[in-house]
Length: 314
Ligand SMILES: Cc1cc2nc3c(=O)[nH]c(=O)nc-3n(C[C@H](O)[C@H](O)[C@H](O)COP(=O)(O)O)c2cc1C
Image (cartoon, rainbow, N blue to C red; front, side, top):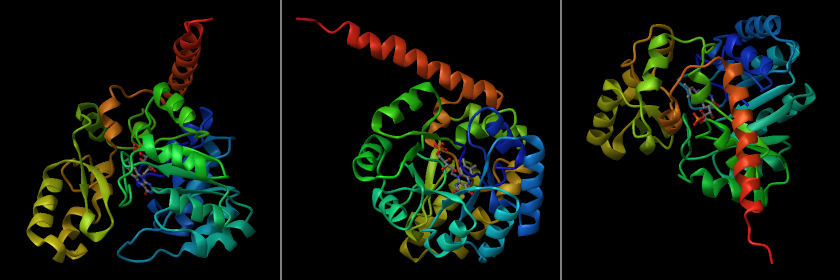
């Protein structure tokens, strides 16, 4: 599954992922109005016959988007899968269910996953501390988070955060997930409709190059370090607990078009996962997905089954 990504999850990427056998997701709020989202959904439908989803993110923003109208646009566009994220989708569940949606809620703790299960979500995407974007405030990495999710949840879930290759997939399956959700890795593909500078930055970055910001606002985000992020962290240090979102407005507001469209890599804070340390090429989405599946098969057949074969027999 491809997670929603602001200014990245456009029709081109969602269609490429769905065409390659994954679940592509259009990022709803990147479209400034429900009408524009309807147009993006239609554009995606022109590019694929396969199912795709739409991400609806409920995050503290500077103004509240018209969510009911976005849901209507999704339903009228014939989309039947929604990835919700940010906050509990509880208030919108009646509308989503009435429209026949399969709701996959992305959450960063087992407690929130259980809540999603209790309000009728069909599945969850469990996002570990390593993830790009908003990892929540609990800081539980996937080696711990996924098996606890497997022990406690009844609905299916995909593992999200830090997923890049066949090893990630096999590990996620071993930990109890039904599959994987990827963000940063899909950003580094030929079809991701972003400036070449973004892809180059991902190739150059290592696993130590992400930073956590906005912790004191309880809106923690993992982003790729750059000059303006360094400035943001300096402001956070100066302001301490008195920090408000207005103090860092210049470093976080309106950044995505500057980065993703203009290729200005120092424009401010944009989400990126630690998995960037595992990204060494910019393949086509289909090549990436085929490679992941082939690596996973080889890993299971040759390494894991091999381990059983070499077990001493009595
Ligand atoms: C550039 C970028 C933008 C993102 N924007 C959103 C978003 O708008 N809504 C959302 O729910 N998640 C967003 N995410 C999070 C991804 O959907 C996904 O959960 C996350 O990237 C998984 O971690 P990974 O990057 O380690 O694969 C974004 C991630 C990236 C890298």
